Amino acid sequence: MSDGDGDSGLDAAAAALLVGGMACFGSATPVSQVVGRSFPVWLGSGLRMAIAALVLVPGALATLRQQGSGPVQVLREADRRDRMLLAGIAVIGTFGFSALMLLGMREAPGAVGAVVMATTPAVTAMGAVAFLGEHLGARRIVAVALALAGVVLVNAAAETVEGSGDRLLLGSGLVFGAVVCEATYSLMGKRLTSDLAPVVIAAAAAVIATIVFLPLALWDAWTFRWSAPTGGQWAAVAWWGAGTMGLGSWLWFRGMARVRAGTASAFMGVMPVSALVLSYLLLGEAFQWIHVAGMVLVLAGLVAVVRSGAQVH
Image (cartoon, rainbow, N blue to C red; front, side, top):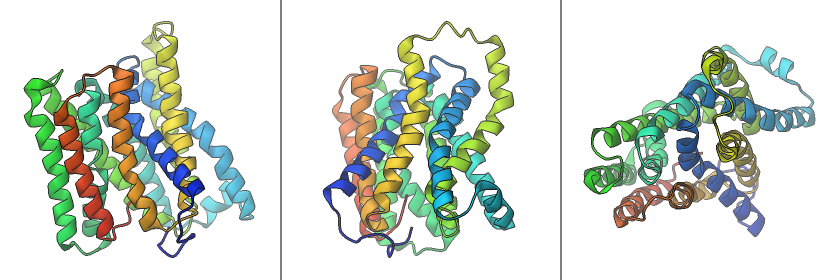
């Protein structure tokens, strides 16, 4: 969506949609830790994609009907570039993100994962410079420096964090890999939005990722003891698919349709705050000021990204 799309004003309904969408996205960090400790990586990720597809596909089909089109027609009319981008979004942005997030959150506390995930806007802004030819600018350099400083800060205090040491660094590295995948999703999606509605892109990515996960998920499912997870753990995997990706995408795209992209990007700050707060509430992690300090640095980087005019979605 370009800055010229949507209404330039911000009403209460649009703000609520944007906040709700980012709060759902932020909940993925602590919830993925619950899923990662309850389900094998490929099975948990595959279930997430299948559930997300079930939530997103009806909305995508309704959008295509309003446009007088259908999924078969869209695929037939798509050029080679669009097909490659869609495949990249599914494999890197969705498949890679889910797997790396689960693996990373097995090693890192939720609060640390929240700070690392908060670097997404800065990483996306740098990707836009590298791959979309956007101008670097002093503010983007400051944004990246602040984001990296926040991550270094919480990892440098490893001795005060549960699960510290090499495992913490490994977990942070894997979560940062998920951030790179998420940034790739955003940048490839930005190229595709000129041809496809965002909800159609998200639904197609979920369906393709489900197909990619299927063989690995079936391998995990063969030896998985299905009676082992508790009701809360099943609820976590259901929310990871239906809530963080399904409902979150629906709320975010609905909100973005009502405002300019630059306005919407400012609401990305809700995501890491949601992740941090829910890590304390859902995972029972102890509050530490070092987490808040790291988050402040990363959010300061987000402000620099927004002020630079970067459009990160």
